[in-house]
Length: 115
Image (cartoon, rainbow, N blue to C red; front, side, top):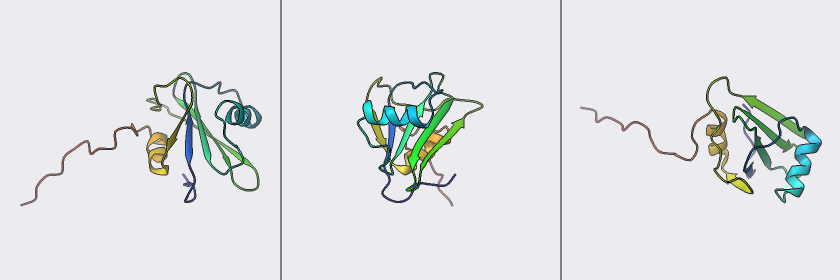
């Protein structure tokens, strides 16, 4: 996946979103519910009720981009809040899109001593 440019913020919409929404519906959510500007160049992420589908809304300077990813196994880890917005770093967003728990950024295995 192509990563966001430097300085771009990633915003997760807390709670489930109707995944039938497209450009206009998600832009309206960004403005009215999240209090953001869909044309700011930031990435806005939305997750469906079953947690296996995520949509990203992004303004690239010329038009809105809508990216979708569906996991065949597993679920996207999302904040437990039902309202509001959560900010992520681009690294956390990369982990989220890979299906990794971005809230636990610790090694899962301790490095072994050589020698």
